[in-house]
Length: 288
Image (tube, rainbow, N blue to C red; front, side):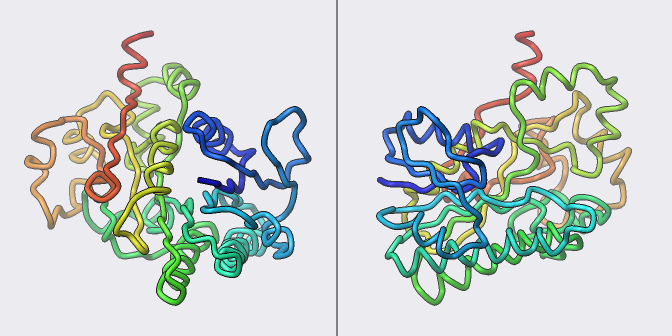
C-alpha cells in the first residue's frame, strides 16, 4: 500500500513514518518543513492550504494518513488555525476524491468533543458518543474536520477513519513526570482527566485504520488504559468530580478490573479497530 503522510515532521508524524516503513508501506511525506536530505522516500515541502500542492501529493497514493495541522490554539491566530486545520483537511479530501484515493485516516483529537479544558464533562466516563460542544478555535477545527470527513464519506464513499487521541506522550515525557510531586501531577492533569496515550500506540491505531474493513466513516478515542497518576481513579473522582454523573455504567463496575482505569473510555476503538494500548507509564517507572 502506498501512503501519503501529511504533517510528517511533527511529534507523531516522525514516529509514524518509521512504523510505516518497518511495515513495508511505500510512503510519500508532505510537510511545510524544507526538503529532507538522505531519505529513501519522496518528501514534498508545502502548505495544506495550497490545493495544487495537495493534489500533487496524493497522486498515485492508495491512502492518506492526515496528521498535518496546527496542534493547538495560537494567540491572535484563530484564522490560521481554522484555515490550516479545516481548509487543509477539505483540500486533502477533495484531492483524494479527484485522484481516486479511497481512504483517509484523519488525525482528529479528543478536543473535538469540547470537554477538555475549561468546560467540565457532562458525564463520566467520556466515550465516543459524547455530544460535541467545542469552544476554542482548535477544538472547533477538529470537530469541523471530523464533519468534513463525514460529509465526504457520505457523498463520495471515501473511507474516513478519525482518530481522537488524548495527550500523546513518549518515554521522555514519563521520565519528566517524575520531577513533579504527586500533588502537582494530580492538579496539572485535572482538566484533561489524567488521560494520556503513548505515541507508539497511536501509530498502531493508524496502521489499523489503514486496513480496517466494514467502516465507511467512524471516530475513535485513543487513550492508555490507565491514568497518568498513581492515585486510584475513584479517589480522583471523589476529590475533583464528585458531582459528575455516571449515567451509562456505575463507577464501581467500570473500575472493577482496573482501579487506575482511564476516565476516557476507548472501548469503541478496541471493538471496531481491534486496537489495544500496549504502553503504560507505570511499567516505564517501575523499570526506572
